[in-house]
Image 1 (cartoon, helix red, strand yellow):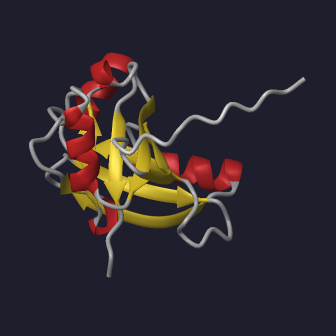
Image 2: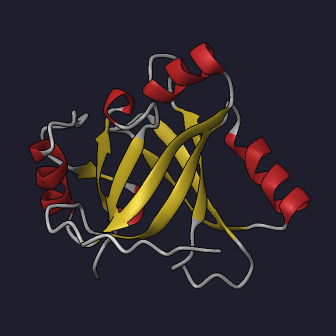
Length: 154
């Protein structure tokens, strides 16, 4: 017998609208793009360099995805002292973060901070495709680097 438990909505919760992407740290972006394209048939949707975060990145999507589905974000270091380079040195290539889409990253950051969780930045930063992002420290999120993403509104 299956029992459905309905919990009251927490009005003080960050308002997540979707899983935005899964971030994967890679040493060689071009090689990783080729792997995901040729092995899994994913489509390269976007590439960019984010100097502030020290990465060269690519968003890969399932064929036919209109940009609203969950993406795979490949992250390669720009320099040996970047956060992604340090991640690769310590853990090797692999899952680096889980990103949730939110409507308002400032509001979501305030809610998370209000719950006593540690955020990486005092204010949201520039993310992929002109999004705004904030990160919840892994020690505050069960060992998972958690990103909050407010997509760019043209």
